Length: 79
Image 1 (cartoon, rainbow, N blue to C red):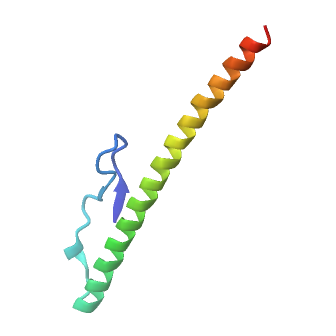
Image 2 (image 1 turned 120 degrees about the horizontal axis):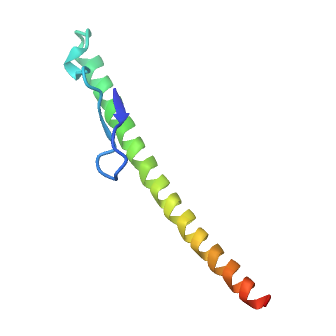
């Protein structure tokens, strides 16, 4: 299990304390491999989503700056 533990751009997800992959009650190694593959796939998906959200946030910031510039320009033209 993983949690979003850091908001400063460093490692965003870390393993929840007290949870260990070896805590599995499963004695079947195939099921453990499946679980590990699923965990890795979910981590990769979360990383891709984080990257997409970062790009979206940067785009929103640029649009904000552009819109403020347009607002100021229109304010100067109205005088």
